[in-house]
Image (cartoon, rainbow, N blue to C red; front, top):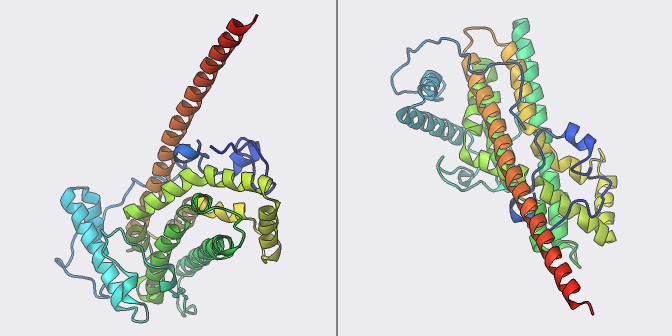
Length: 365
């Protein structure tokens, strides 16, 4: 069992410090047997959906080949089993569209929506590029393009951070001899990073295809809905967030017991252009959904009533808020289990101390 308070690593704040509490979006909870919030209040009621035109062209797609958004929206709002199936079918058609229109990508990058397989990280190299601003745009259209640019830049930086964790930390630690971390500790430290990167690799491909058509569609909300409504996204993030405290405990204890490991971390930080620590990189997934919510709120504020992207943006915000709430709920449950284990351990220790004291007293001459 790893006790986070046994050692101190100056780049990793203690879990009980005030500064950590202020910085963390979710509460720290250790995962499983290794050790031991509320929903976001952003002032926007995502349940306040506006009315929309239910007329659509049967089961077909829109003129651009994408799944008909009216059908996707209606199916999602119905909330029925049939509605959910229609939504999943619409998402699959959208992914098929992406697959067809991205010939340079390997077909193995995509699996069926219900498959548990992830793409290989090396399978994509598709960075979304926004075309120059065309003439004749309204002020609101220009603002929406700027917000889209912020989304693209934010996602690029996030992907770079995830890749840095794997390429500059996990990979060298796997290759260094003698080993600084055992296989078990490596797995605990970088738990679910690769799966999170793979989720966002798919998201980047979808973003790239949509950005290429931005001037004709001006829609982004449905891409978020399709990308972050998958169970594999919740699973990967939930397990990562719950394991975060344990991972940082491994880092702190190893820094105290192996000076060479501390030297490795400092060398990686010193040679990076931004000097971000491993802790700073590992915090990125914790902060991702709140960042998305803020960006999409800005986009929604600059999307006029009746715009085809308004309802999809509201759906996307609802999806992201729900993910954040579920993560907090999972962490509260883990926190309760951790507290129960600590209480049970303390009770057992007191009981054993009483037994030992009784034996010592009985053996006194």
